[in-house]
Image 1 (cartoon, rainbow, N blue to C red):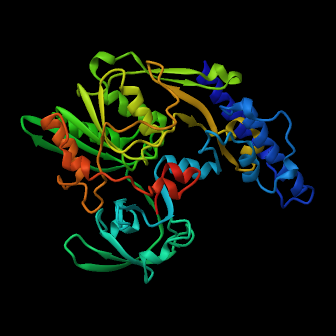
Image 2: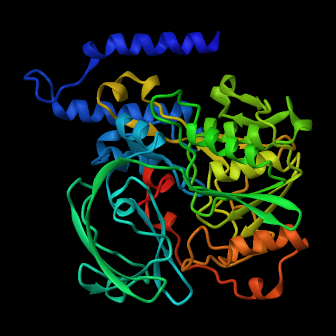
Image 3: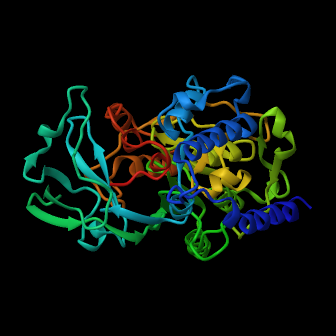
Length: 445
């Protein structure tokens, strides 16, 4: 019945949109009134849906704020909220189905000596088509040494230009074999891949799967709850008849809760079928939205434990996956502590005519999650069981890459040797630090 009611609401909004749209170019429309109407809609929607609704004042003068963003900044609960944002419906839908626009399609990482490396590459992006690989070291960008991009605050600003198709940048690299190469590429629009790498290894008498998963995204053209990449990967691991699985979430800033549930149903042991996966809780005004999601076992894997490679860039849906499995199986974290985001969002324009008509998508924190044992509020992240440094100079398929090596060693020996743990360093910067809003969940240059 609830699903039917939401479908009816969507139909009514779509039918009503032509009559309620605010068009600043019309002769009889006051742009200031439109602007204030949108700001008021942001306030009203926050007051209705925001998870920390009780922290928002009862009255709010929107005319005191110069932009929609300033309104949102004034309303968020800054003690805990690092994630609420504004965007457009098109940008939101594109991000959650992996459609990138105006980027080169690569990630950056920094080692303990402040050397910069390519941390990942999307296959269909300009960098991927140009042959870039994880492990390439940046020497220069647009003719300037990397050190010259360091800011007074100790961070870096690489000045890659606006996120627009056709913007050009030139990069000089040192390759793993010691040679150098200079590449010029343009920013473009393309379909990203969430699965960066997959393989299966023989470790003693065990078959061990290795899955590098970069973001929880649905497949465009299918339902918004399903990933074809996920299905293909788990069909691969089932065909390999793996005994153990290493999931690498070190670069995974989150994404779709529905796709997370899809993955969890493959991972959970048979004994947990039908039991609580996670519980969503909303503010008191929206308690009717509270929902319990149960496991519905998929596939033939019956794992006893899961090894997860993590970093401070592992956030949101990555942490939901960890938290949901812990009541039912052993979960070993290797790498670094996770980010700490036990809360989630859904877009609100479909609940507000003014936001919808003006193409303003408000995506604030609207719910918190807890697992079957009631574990929630992990705002400091999940601590790694074993701290192991990111080995940015090595590609995903290199079994000597420190975090992968540690995971394989744990499978074979039940522990990780002192050398790997001694070499650990706390990164000064992760990619998640360079972005805000929607881009924070799916960071890419």
